[in-house]
Amino acid sequence: MINPGGQQPRKDESGGQAEAPWGRLLILGPHDICDPSSGAELRSYHLARQLSAFLRVVYLFFRREAGGELERRTLPGLGGDPLEAWRMPRPRMYTLPKLLGGLFGRTPLTLINYTCPAMRETLREVFQQRRFDFLHIEGVHMSGYLKGVLSRPDRPRAVVGDWHNVESELLRQYGRHEGSLARRLYAAQTAPKTRAAERAFLRRAEAHLAVSECDRRTLLALEPRANVWVVENGVDVEFFAEPDRAERRRFRVLFVGAMDYHANVEAVARFAREVWPLVRGRPGLVLTIVGRSPAASVRALADMPEVEVTGTVADVRPFYREALVQVVPLRIGGGTRLKILESMAAGVPVVTTALGAEGLRARPGEDYLLAESPEDFRDCIGRLAEDAELARRLTESARDLVRRQYDWSVVCAPLREIYAGLAAHRAPE
Image (cartoon, rainbow, N blue to C red; front, side, top):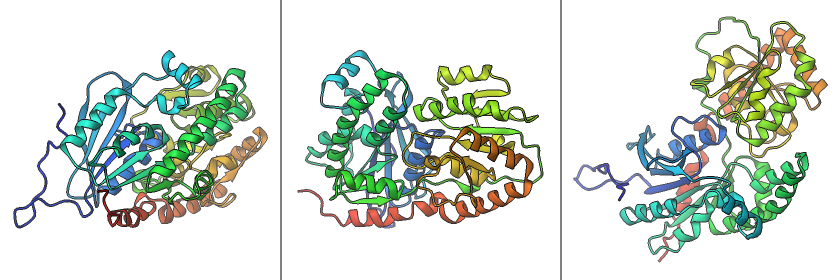
């Protein structure tokens, strides 16, 4: 048996138990928030920390790797209690039974991959030992557990869904750009099933968080009666601020991102094939691809001249400090890109497609440079290499933008209002 209530609750001055202002919150997610590195992990971690300022938070999630045992950790919270992090062994993905179920059943593979008996059993035991006022579910991937939770007599009084993106829209984009016929057919077959699951999730939860107004409109088109708020992606501005402004050689054309994510893999492979041959004639420049678990097609890019693939790094900031530019040549994607906000906080100019910058309150030509074609990317990189004043102007404007509008403490401010409203919601009888 697990013991999710292992630490002693706080005491008030009269000796009784003191709860956080609005009670207990269980977050259920697919993302490993211990040592977060990907955009999804960073959002999950920072939202959990901000919520811990006024709720006692338990975060139950899958670790990145399969196998191992259930593990409990504590992470720094913003309230009087630490954030409790419970790491479940990740289920095996894309097994033959799961693939067949996704192909012939009504449930999309997106949900099947993350729904497993071990997590159901852990949820049952957690609820046996502790009552939660709220349940926060990270994405449609984990919504397969919602029916079981809502059927409990001690169900939480309210459920919140956090949408890092709209998965059915990503599948639509994936099918449009994918060259493989089999993968296009997979996207076409899976997108409507995923859309149905998203619609059901929108109807079952009392509130939903979208990362941009664009995603909010997409969700409301799926279910007009849903209660959808915008809580944007952010950045830890202080963490990425350069400790000293000494001039240093900037020679990296940087791409940062989880390199097992199909949108990033497609983007960086296409950039290396189509853009890099136009750029690498400039002496001293190196295309540096930084991110964990690079796919085989990404690792193969290291065979090209002046291209390096780092894999997982302990700290991405040294790469930002040597970067001339960060490129974001995305054609597939939803939500908003944390890599752009990181670059802006670190003082690195950004060249991105319109899709890459979608959902951000950043201005092309003022906070970043816009590029769509290989020639656009070549020209923008060339301008930044030759025009130090342009680079300075872009980075100063972008850094001011993230300080004012995108620090996590700023973008998460609506969470208090959202949960205050939910706290007033009458608990189910």
